[in-house]
Amino acid sequence: MKKYFLIPALLLSLTSLAQPTSQRKIQVAILFDTSNSMDGLIDQAKSRIWTIINDLSGLRHQGQVPSIEIALYDYGNSSLTESSNYIRKQIDLSTDLDLISQKLFGLTTNGGAEYCGAVISSSLSELSWTSHPQDLRLIYIAGNEPFNQGSVNYKEVCQTAATKDIVVNTIYCGDYDQGVREFWYDGAKLGKGEYFNINSNKAIVHISTPYDDNINAYNDSLNRTYYGYGSIGNTRKLAQVSEDANAEAQSISVKAERSIAKSKANYSNGSWDLIDAVENEGKDINTISEQDLPKEFQGKTEDEKKKLIEEKKAEREMFQQKINELAVERQKYIEEKKNEGNPGEDDFGSSVRKSIEKKATELGYEKETTP
Image (tube, rainbow, N blue to C red):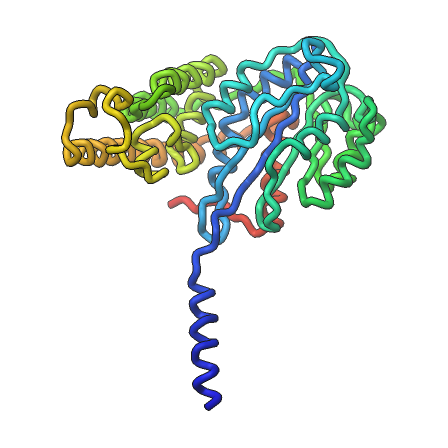
């Protein structure tokens, strides 16, 4: 009789093991000091944002691609109100990479009071942080004034973050020892994170590669596979091109990094792009009114619409694959050039990337393997 009781239990156990795990999340909140002295910091972030996103996109958890959510705050700007502690949430935790870029490139500096404890507290209370122990939750706060300013106690706030497994990393724009004296090291220690110091006025040196132009050419072709629908479709499609231009204004290398990010699974735009909406969000194209469809899809039968969707999806995947293949060779070239010279000082991007790699490894994340 015991066998008959054990068999269902065994089957239940095997079924449980076979169940797919839910998608893990990587949540990153970046808190920028936007007082007068921080133009260099913002420029570094603009130059490094797509490299950071590509690093995040290359992480895997048990073979699965995690979802990436990024939030952005600025603080210490005198254009903000005293009642808000000179804090502004630019964007909630979001998967919309174009919108994140738009908000970052829209930051401007203006003198003000910098309250680190207050802005960390705001990010803890206002953002929808997950609670899963294997989700990666990180805060990065960057600035150059004493960490203990303002009425909100940074010690309590950083300790609260740590109890929620939200890691607080601090980036002091100035001398290492000065940052220690001004409590940036202490904030990171209490928040179970990393303390970095950078020269925020240091110009980023980009390594140009023989692959950048071809990657960017494929990116331009990739853009032509996006079809805006609904009330925001056309506006967001224009924004996609605008963020390409913002990246290119930094350098051809930065645009190449953005192009590579657009070839990854985390670059998904189902809120405005018809292909992503149908393929990734499960939207039924026949529920979209004719006037809200892109003109290429108007006046077509149900079968014709589905066929066109499949054609454009295949075309997009082809361009993404071409970019991915070139990206592998590009990275090899960059690594070779780095090995030939001095790696240099930390900047905003390298600080973020180092700490992401360390914390991700601790939680069992691995880097995507490339052929």
